[in-house]
Length: 295
Image (cartoon, rainbow, N blue to C red; front, side, top):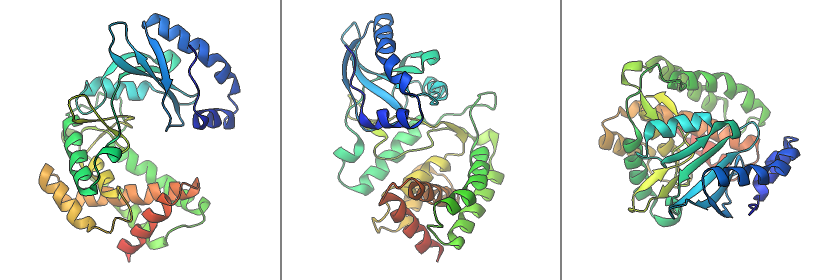
């Protein structure tokens, strides 16, 4: 059975000139289904960088098959999922990185659809982040929080110009200062495995009622890097972001200033990027909040 290819995946592949991948995909799915003894089900919508299909294992276990589009290397994600080993993240059941394919634990609906109160979602996201964090050494081939901050510092000014300067120069300067401080603060001895993009659509309900994360970016960084994405969540909510930061700090014993600075970084970078690709109103909401906080 050949899976349906969601429109967003098809558009991404065609925009990159990789139409031949679409022709080859049914054969790849059939081959993986035979090798892993899978029954192929329905495709899942929502993403654009991978085909995600519901499958059933030979013993009846529900799972999902994820195949990255050309240019999307799932080897990094596979490494993160192996390290997490089902703790806070979807469990990795199989991998074929040569064909950019992962076989994953099937999870339920996203937290956004289940938990109505944003404050409760922030607390639950904090809990699932803590379950994922674990010490990893510098021998593990993951980028560091320092490298991410440096990458963002190089990229943000150019992206801001390309997006038509969608926020104030002072907001960009504030984010760059935060990037420099978090780069200097990196310490291999206290770094942990972090997800890198925690939000309510990346947290899905597991069979026991808890939540697990999907689509990890994967970094070796200070825990504040993940908590900063929770501070970035829900722009326009009009809650006290410093109070949110202090609540996260209290729950985790992570330095509040570090959380706040990563929140600033994620807010400005995500906002400028969202504006550059027309992902609205998310981009405008993030940057309006960033400008207000800078002012």
